[in-house]
Length: 168
Ligand SMILES: Cc1cc2nc3c(=O)[nH]c(=O)nc-3n(C[C@H](O)[C@H](O)[C@H](O)COP(=O)(O)O)c2cc1C
Image 1 (cartoon, protein in one colour):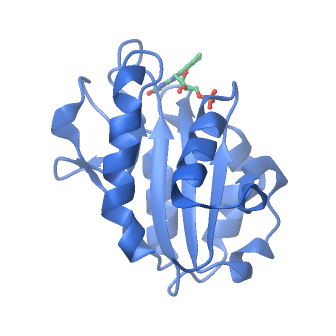
Image 2: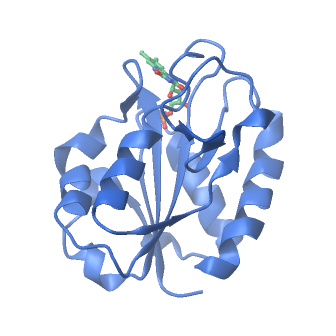
């Protein structure tokens, strides 16, 4: 695996916890797991791969801290040599019509900057009404619902890691 950094935005700690679980499974050092509120632009040149995570807030928005600097950093850099995988968390029971929708904004930003995005996930395995993060029946990354389906999280992470690990 080439040098990989995980960057997450998290308000109550759920996405942070998932970021740490993913890091541990991939053998990524905790120094390479960064809260987006501490992100510096220089970080982009230090890694080949990024795994970006966000929870969804408002009605389908990215987690707030992404809007301060993080999103701009990924918007303003050429990412054509970077491989990026995305993950998100949300609540499919209370916010079933915008389930993990915030993830789309990350996807759209890094795609427009030229990144290769890997790790889409079939949406059939989830119960929700609608999500902007679904394209052609697949979520643009791994989505997790710790509020309602935490029992599925371990399997979902393991399956996703199997899918992406040889591409990182
Ligand atoms: C006010 C509010 C709005 C939310 N909006 C959404 C939403 O639109 N879509 C969704 O999937 N989850 C939504 N959620 C659920 C959170 O994304 C979920 O609780 C998540 O696990 C929080 O992760 P964090 O602690 O890492 O920020 C919302 C939660 C709150 C309290």
